[in-house]
Image 1 (cartoon, rainbow, N blue to C red):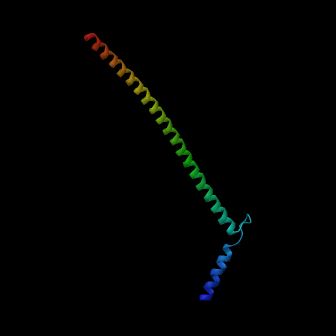
Image 2 (tube, helix red, strand yellow; image 1 turned 135 degrees about the vertical axis):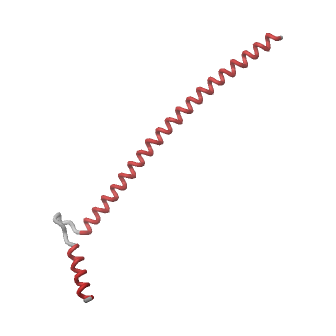
Image 3 (cartoon, rainbow, N blue to C red; image 1 turned 90 degrees about the vertical axis):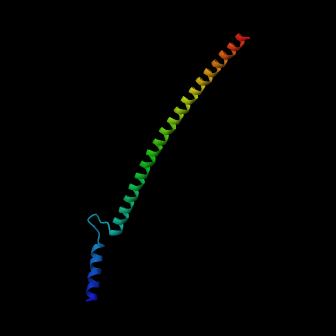
Length: 96
């Protein structure tokens, strides 16, 4: 009984090892499936990296803009402080 089951198993395995209509064997089909899966993963990773690059560039642009705006605000504040100091100085001179 064991020998018969073993023989049937061997026959089933050998039947599955045949070439398909295109002439490719099971190892070629498995290899192609692995290659396709690898290509899909590679494409997916590249797409995600491109998204990260775009997001990084957008964030960098926002930081540049915020820095530029802060610098302008600081310049305006410095000018206002300077004007205020001048007015205080003028008032002090008038009191003398």
